[in-house]
Length: 303
Image 1 (tube, rainbow, N blue to C red):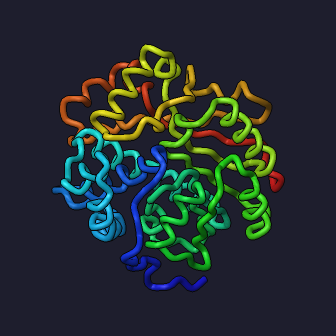
Image 2: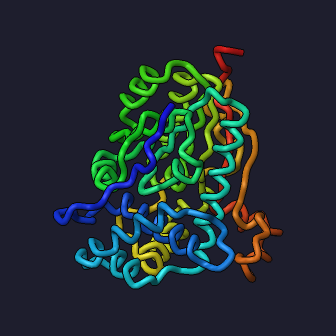
């Protein structure tokens, strides 16, 4: 399929950069990727993130909130920047490996925010969907255009109408769902229902998602996490963890046909930019704090 040379647009003067607290985390991760992409020996090459931050900075300068001010001033925690870049690179790798194994497959980026994965993957010919809340997608549309293969879905992930659209446009085919930095902010019962629905509607699909350990959801640790997120990261009160797991294979207990495949922690990457915190990779307490799990959901109808 033919793809336009670029899908980026120039922002209009009337734009604003006001987003809900949870959606605002997408600005932080965008600026982390852009900053790392411009650093020495970058972990991640993300030129489109750099373009977007240059377009957004004049708008954020007018916002006046703490997060926007810190991003405009380039005040990004180094460890967070490294974490976000390593995570994005690993999720890109999951996507590439999936498309190599399934040339007829498709990708759905759940809770995409201002992610630029489609561009980092080289604008693949495979169907690629960015899914997020309507207000976030409306904001993103001001900067990014759709193509024949790249589509923006303005839905809550729990509004399953997006599944109907994807199935109508693509039909049954191998699918990978990527949920990077999303599930921990959602209600546990809704996450479980979502995973089971994906299993039923897209049998044989794969899910790659970030999770946090259940201990960080209990009141004591949750208060610590909230202080860190609202203090160091300058996130609003609405961005707090709700969903956690006791272990990596927990989803298998939710229903038949869900199979745990592998897990990944950025601490285990061994990258030199981790610095002294790399020492914690030997301790499960730290590698299993906030990490990624990979599942297969159900049996493919084509098997």
